[in-house]
Amino acid sequence: MIGSDYVLEAHNIYHTTEVDTGGCFNGGGQSALVLKGVHLTVHSGEVMAILGSKGSGKRALLDVIARRSEGSSRGQVLLNGAPLTKSLFQQRCGYVTHACDFIPGLTVSQTLHYTPTILGGYLKSSKVRQVLADLALSQVSHKKVENLNISEKRRLAIGIQLVRDPVMLLLDEPTQGLDPLSAYLLISILSNSAKKTGCGILLSLEKPRSDVFPFLDRALFLCLGGAVYSGGTRAMLEYFHGIGFPCPQLENPLMYYLCLSTVDRR
Image (cartoon, rainbow, N blue to C red):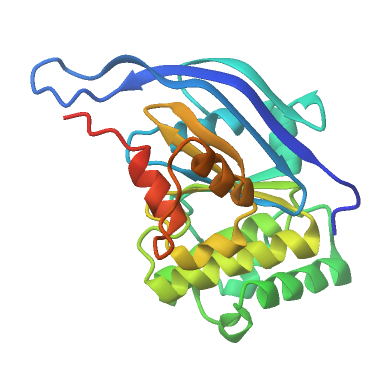
């Protein structure tokens, strides 16, 4: 359980990196500005979604915050007012990507138990049982990792980070490839975990469903690396209404404003 409040802030983030231009003869990509003055704030216990189409800069922003990006960046990333260095991120935060390789032959429970943490003995076992229950993995705790389905694997990857008690958790497209029910389950689990432990959650979504809207406290809409909106989800509806773009009553507000903020670069 996290004992105090934490705030993750990103101020005026610019990032330049090499991008694939898709050419057949140029032998690679070219340098491009992929983030342009982005701001965000996430508090303990909140879930924030980074929303944008492919190429909008979602993953680049997560990588910049996690201090694992390639290229050059400027701006500030702060954790409780202190610069979030790579070392501090590794100590206090977690990052769930799609490139999580499990050790074959281990069970779900063993995988969590062998994750390095400051806990040991009974406290470690108790923490593993808690994470299994929170992630709806208790029923498959003795199942070998190679026999898990994609939803179970995604939740186990999250569990590996949660067992370390991070104060902030970043997730790159956690619902990608999941069926609607599994996606709903995953987002609801993350929301419950944030409220229960006080961990701040920052995740990227490309095609958000309407049923996940109640679980999101904040949203950041990206378009070509720039922020169209960054703030609370409730204030979001008022903001777009105030500038002349009210959300139709039967529309999914996440997808509606995502479509409005998407540019066809063709």
